Image (cartoon, rainbow, N blue to C red; front, side, top):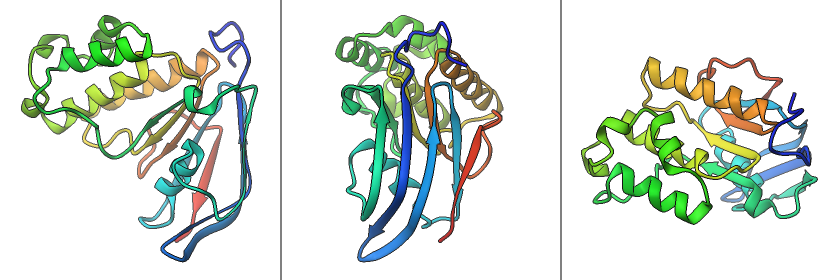
Length: 203
């Protein structure tokens, strides 16, 4: 699916017999799945089943209880991943435009294109504290666009988005896949993009 995209090394991600524990309790175990370039998988499960912990383990923030996480044709996972968690990670006094300029300068991407893509051009001068929850989520999603990282790890990315925002998010996922990118998203509701597979966790 990624032929001709910018991620010419065709990255892959696989999980082998993974177990995650939190507070001395095993959330899940013996979990295995794989995603090739252009792949999209949804992680589903009840609250407390370990969806966020799975993403954090793949991102390198949490040590697995057992099993392996393998990145294929990825030299340095830390610079190949975009992790978007529950928190938007915004500085309340900084404007929308300032956030994207900072991320663009830090990550080497085009902040102007990202501003347009997430639909926030008209409020570029507003501080983050003045944004609605949906606008704040759009701004956080802009971070995905200011650097071409092949693997997106998204934790409830559609949270607080209205119908237009969810359509925008679905298009971002489709476009990323078309460039040979990988998307792994923890969701309560489908994002409107047909996944290659569904990873179901049981609490």
